[in-house]
Image (cartoon, one colour):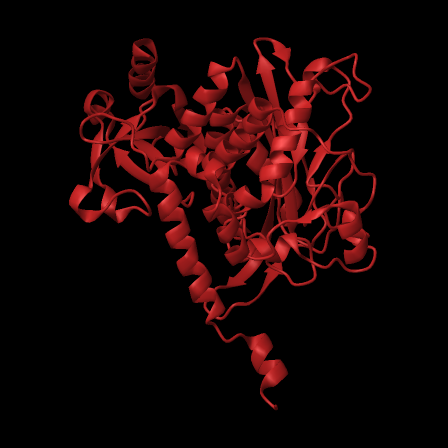
Amino acid sequence: MERQKEFVLRTLEERDIRFVRLWFTDVLGTLKSVSVAPAELESAFEEGIGFDGSAIEGFARVYESDMVAMPDPTTFQVFPFEGRGIGESARMFCDILTPEGAPSWADPRHVLRRALSKAADRGFTFYVHPEIEFFLFKDIFPETGAKPEPVDDGGYFDHTTHSVARDFRRQAILALERVGISVEFSHHEVAPGQQEIDLRYADALTTADNIMTFRHVVKEIAMTSDVTASFMPKPYNTQPGSGMHSHLSLFEGEDNAFHDPGDEQRLSKTAKAFIAGLLRHAPEFTAITNQWVNSYKRLYSSAQPGQISEAPSYVSWGKANRSALVRVPVYGKPNSARVEIRSLDSATNPYLAYAVLLGAGLKGIEEGYELPPGTEDDVSALTSAERVAAGYQSLPSNLAEALDKMESSELVAEVLGEHVFDYFLKNKRQEWEDYRTQVTAFERKRYINL
């Protein structure tokens, strides 16, 4: 760690970096930042940067508001494209501490660290590969709530020649790679203006940091193109929403713990128990992976005829089945064995989301959960009676239902810790209350002449 600090300080001097941003997130996953002068960074490494925790969503009450942001030098990265002609800038993520130097229970990064530490105690390293979807809009109208205008009319895998989207993805990928984030794929998604960029797999903490960086970079590059990037889960009534399908795997040293060459499905007992844990606890953690009122418009969207909809509404798993909540992709190399969970949207807090997913999977391993039979059905195309007969449980249909399931979950309470668990429930109950008391344009249009 000392060597890394020395590297950071030397780089600041050699590259004449004028601004160092220290980043962290609140409980809801909103990026927070404080800038320090390079000359002050050495003392920040030793003492941290004090701030008022009561002003941050979910961090502290007024009478215990003092908190400390401690820079993590291993996350140092130069942002060469943000200088605007006045020198380069850099960023580091922070761990949030109490004034006594203990980790803050309110820090989402600490929540994920605790979950990863529990996995490490069992000999596991947790890896994640996210597929991040988002929209690009020419214009948005947050004041009136009018429908935003997409930057193109493209569809799935369309080659949008000469469009903003094509140039934007190229610029965004170059910017991401310049800050050390490897991109595997990018393409146009199903809806007009909708994009997907897939990040290379990494350990879960690095991936969560990368997702927060990704959102910042994408919004920055969009601004330079005079468009707006949005991670809203479901901006249009009749178009698919933006998900963040995440591929998960556990490794024991250099070996993939999910692979068993002797199994008919090439899945180890560990993998099957992990999947069973995800399935059993899915209704309980959905409030975390899908935390907004709007998230449930994506999960329960009705696709137009002939249109692709890949948001799962029901608890099931299958091999290469894109209608299932958990999909096992076909893979070649043993170390590519993984499972894909498809409910997450791209507006989740990645630290909390990956913590609860890991917690559910580990619970399945610890308790020896039995994996139910996989499905080859298009679950969303079945009738309600057919789904009941097949034993497919529904995910919560709205935020209120999801919060009820979460509130009764010992697993989610244990993974998040009492502070984050209680604050999250309180905040989201208020969001639901604000939403359900709104009289919408839909209601006025349908009922005004009653």
